[in-house]
Structure formats: C-alpha cells, structure tokens
Image (tube, rainbow, N blue to C red; front, top):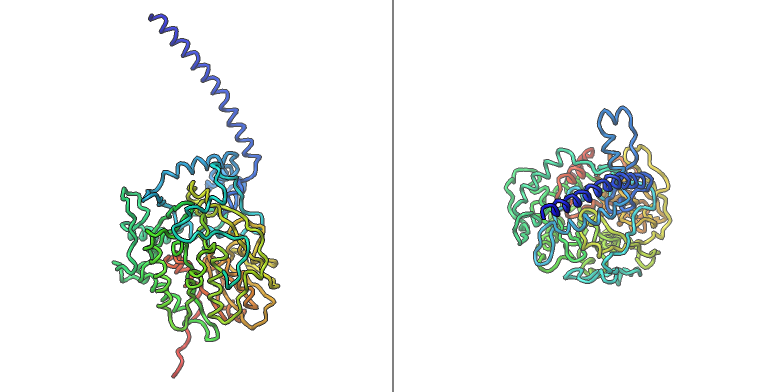
Length: 529
C-alpha cells in the first residue's frame, strides 16, 4: 500500500515538474508576443474621450530625462497606453470598482477625486478632429433603447435627433498629463476634506445613510476671507445608468463668491454691462426624490449668489427656462458637463436680459448625434454606466465667422479656429477644448461685442453667442495669462459674462483664478452726486 502511494506521488511530482517546464517555456513566449503587439500597436482611442488627455508620446532618453529620472515612468505610461489588452484590463477593473462605495437603498455612492475632475478634465487643446471613441456594444445585450429605463425618478431626458425650436423646446494643467495639484491646492483640499468629513455623502465608513450638509449652516472659521471656500460633497451618486455629482455648497459660500463678482463689477467701465452665470448640474434636475435635499441646496446656492450681487451686476437665472424644458436632454449621464441643449436655455436667458436676438435651434443644421462615454465613466469605470452611453447633440453655427485661438504658452494666436468641431466624439467638439483665449468676428452687425469668461461649462455657449454679437471673445480664466483689461479695451467689449459651475463656484482655486484676471484693473472712482 505504501509503495503504491509513493508511486502515485512520484507520478504527481513528475506531472507537476513537466507542467512547470511547460509554463516556464510558454510564459516568456506569451510576454514577448504581448510586448511586440503592444509596441507596434496604436494607443487606445478611449484615452482622449474618457480620460481627457492625449496619448503619452514616446519619451526621448537624454541627459535631462536620465538626471531627473523621468524617462522610465514616461516609457511605462507610453507602453500602458498601447497595451493590446487594455480594454480587457479595464473591464476587469470595472467589475472590481463595482464593489467600491457603499449602497443605500439600491443606489451606490462612490468616492472619486472630484477636485481633479473639475479642474483638469475637458482641458484639451489638441487640434485634431478625430478624438473620442465609440466602444463595442455592451456584452449583456442592453441596447441604447433599453439604456433609458430607470434613468431617474424624475424626467428621463430622452435624447432627440431632431432640433427643437425655442418655443417648444464647463486650469492651467497640461492636458497631456494629469499632474498633481500644487501645494496650495492640496492644502485647500485637505482643509475641505477635514471640514466636510462628517457630512460627506461618500464616506467609506459603515454608515448607511448619506447626510447632506445643511444649506446656510454655520462655519467655524468665520474670520477667513472665504469661510466655506471648498465646501462641497466629494462624491458621485450612481443611480441606474447615470452618475450624479452631489453638492454641498453653503449660504456663506454663495455670498463669498458673489462678493468676488461684485468687486469685479466695480472695476469695469460704465460702458460694459456685466452678467453672472452659475451653471447648475444634474443634481438640480435628475436627483431621485430621496436626494431632493441636494437639489434644493444647489438651487438655493445659485439663487443666493444672484441675490447677493451688487446692483451693477446682473444675474442670469437659468432655472426658469431649464425647468420648463427639463424633459429634454439637458445633462449627460456619463459626463460631468451639461449638454449643448442645457447650455442653450442658459444662453436664451442671457439674451433676454441683454436685449439681443437668440438663435432658434431648429434654424441651425444638426448633424446626427454621435455616442460616447464621458468623464464620469472615465474616473469610475462603473459598470452601470455602460448602459448609459451618451449622445452628443451639436448645432452648426449658421452665421459667417472667422476665429483665432491662443494656445497655452503662445504669444500669437492661431488663425482658422472653429467654435464647433463636428467630427469629434466627445465634449471637445465645443470650441475644440479649453484655450486661454478665442476670438471670433461674425457677420452680425449690431455694435455689440461680448466677452465670455468661463470654464469648460461655458464651451457649448460660445457657438450660440456667434449669432447674437459681432465679436465674441472667450477667455478661460484657468489658463489666461495676459492682461484682461487690455483685451477688453482693444476689443471694445460691451457685454461681459462671468460663467462658472456650481461646484467650482465654491472652490478657492477657481476664486483665485477669477480674481487674478482683474488684478491689474483698478476700481472706478466714485461718481460725485
């Protein structure tokens, strides 16, 4: 009996030994094949669409890269972008990420780096028109028509391929990399996390109830200039096939931002009319009923900003027209921006205040919408969002115009810029991304010249403005380095819009950038009575 057991062990050992030899032979071959295929292949087209960056270029080995130890990490990133099984790896990552966050009544709240998302994504300035990606159909058999089921407890905002008439119917980081924020931003973020720790809706504790910070709640550090400078909930609600950013801005934060804007209004010449637009997010329109407190917070925040402005500054309230048309496709499901249709109604609200004509959507050419997955899918890889593929509706400006754009670090603008890039498959179709300055001369001759100071939420507004003004100047406050006063004077600006999003309106980083634009301008001398 013992001999037979020993014989079986020997046989087993021999088989294992042979198998080990096979593995030792096959594994190097497999690694070699994978390496060759990846080295000779192209970068994953999904990078630019969802990760909002260009594919990493092949680094050069020289004295500088060797001394600073930057060559190896760059080479590794270059290889990762071309890894032939990148999509398979990301699919596995998606399944693992499905376990992240905590669940409340069937909804999942995830912890993501919202600061990096808001300050970095959408800041592309690559001139190619072929960006974006169109992924393969979802493996579980869900089609686009099924994707709308369970979209939210509110309106389903089913996209339409037909344009609706007016009556019926979003830094200075380099886009090719995702560098860490500077030390000052990190300190601000640390203060924010500490301040909001007990109220964060996406905390990783075992709590099952998400608490919204109370609007108008008291702040301990009242003595600071911006007492609630970064007071917002750092997280995402995954509801069905939609990702929704939660909001936690307070009344003091709204007043602090309004004070900054009022100071700017005091510096502008009397010949310029200043307007303020705070863009809402999906939480105001697509929040399930049980998360209404977040919806109310954002709406109250934006209304408080408007009510706290100096009388010389006019508030653009986007809510009435957006509420009237909230059954439309106003916000993406997988991207943190609003759609062109959502931005359109804010644009119409502005034209009513400014007394200029607004273009009708059904009077413009609307190409067949493209489909894409946006930034929120890019940072979460949440498998639920695979059934929420977005549709990119665009309208081609019908006025004649010529435009220039100023690249980061450049001294002279480039000619031949466009305000819409129809071939793109992502949010980068609007203005081509974020540039420090874009200037357009239109065929409109009404003596009105507008300047739009914006972040990426303002990009889809720019093409509409072409129909209402003879000159349109677009300034990205995150990257513009020139003297704004000189541009205002040179272009003879008559109307100035400062646009921000609700979440970035409570960020000290964005406050500093906006104030920095006007630091060279002095306040007007008081008029004698």
